[in-house]
Image (cartoon, helix red, strand yellow):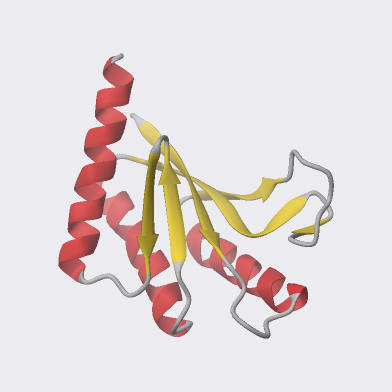
Length: 126
């Protein structure tokens, strides 16, 4: 089974402190853990304002298969998180590709899944 790893990032909203951002990071990680492997993104750089311990606030690493149903589950989980937190934007990084999501439509989610699958399949051929 071919898998794909990608990073999900989101920034603090105006007036949001580090504790609130950490709680949201944990919430998204817990949501995603129901549908895929997820880990907190470690900081390779010295500790900064946007990190707690060795982890970067608002950033997760996800590993999933390229099976359509699992990719859909991951994307729907991210979309549900964004819906619960109106005004929040997430950035997905898959290899060299970067996508920004706010409140994507079902058609946009389906297109994103196809782009990710095609990019990973192309990369595995090289």
